[in-house]
Image (cartoon, rainbow, N blue to C red; front, side, top):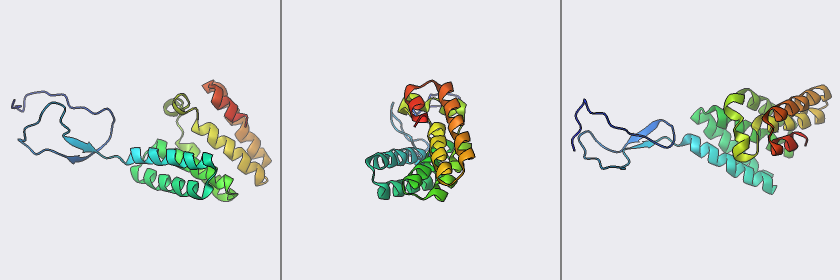
Length: 178
């Protein structure tokens, strides 16, 4: 089958992204279901690094967790992805808190929150049981309290409770009470 310029064909991908490389040349024969282009995968790598961070964080290996959080932040910045950048800053903040690096924790947590978009991110709790705004604000409450800023700590906790109530997800609600 030869396509003419006036022919319409459907080419698709199960994920969105930027084309990194085209795998066929003009006039090359193409079969049905043949891969014709490769998408840039930086966002997927950032998401994978975030999951790797979570593994080491839950395991209690803060030495490795901080390295994975740093890698996630670096890749997220390169990808320019709002969601993964939010997750990476939250990961850096949470791990810095656990490492008693409170100033760094406060800085990263403050950088995570502006990337949160309730319309786009509220569904995260359904997929992972975690809402990044609730996690960020919960950790912010701890950091602010430890750093002698009780009014800011209470404000963060109150905002956490409001978001958790709006989401009405049991695990997110439990996390907000942490």
